[in-house]
Length: 324
Image 1 (cartoon, rainbow, N blue to C red):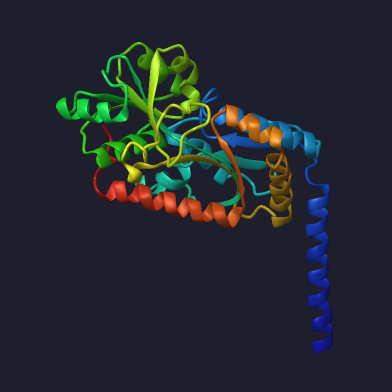
Image 2: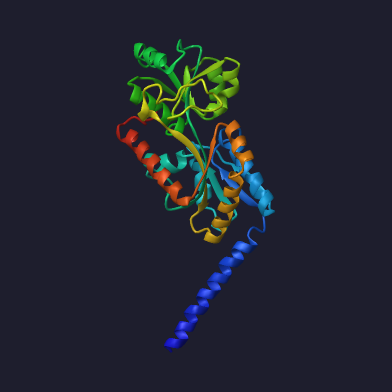
């Protein structure tokens, strides 16, 4: 009897191994859906499209970039969390719906840790402080000085309450000891238009999203919230150079799978993306978008998520992330 049981266990293990190997060998057999929980045309757009194109090319199946904006990324993240974990739905997102959403909303319809597995950390970029000519400041120090002389009068556009831009602006204001007024927007397009039209004074966002307006002199970038300068704007000091080393904040893009997606599939997909990111041409291409390629594995991704969430919770506990 014991011998039969042992043979049964061995047989079941063999079947599981065969099934896992088959899943990896055969997958994918149809279209893959890549959910991006933000609007088309935003910072995630070019990253997602390039990753989707490469996955499709290497795996031989079409990949749809499914933009599902709203509620700071939580609408799209909810859809991804509730999708079948069969290897045909994935999530590509920046931090907000993963690091900020749960601390802000206890009734969130998904749990970022319980419902997702990180596959690979794709790229990262520091956010920056962008202003228009309505603020008489050519440096971050001058901006801080002006804001201190006019407490609450400086308006800072944010793309969604509780999002990364909001977090960056709050962190900057807190560390610099200034009071500003936050103005929330539903998307980058309207925010950009009001920045250019001088309806708001400043914004915290991706340098790449504003680079054309910066080149033509319409907008200015005063600092990047990092410990180093960005290659595309080498004349712009980092926030560390500006004297505020505790005001650093990075945006990143991580590829996630719904929890329960077979490991053979996530390993195969992660390998495809990692190989793609390792090429010099891709690193150069991402540089032009304002991002540094990373290629961190799932374990490192988890560590980054935990660290960034702790930073956000600190601001939240100080009562600084309230809605304007």
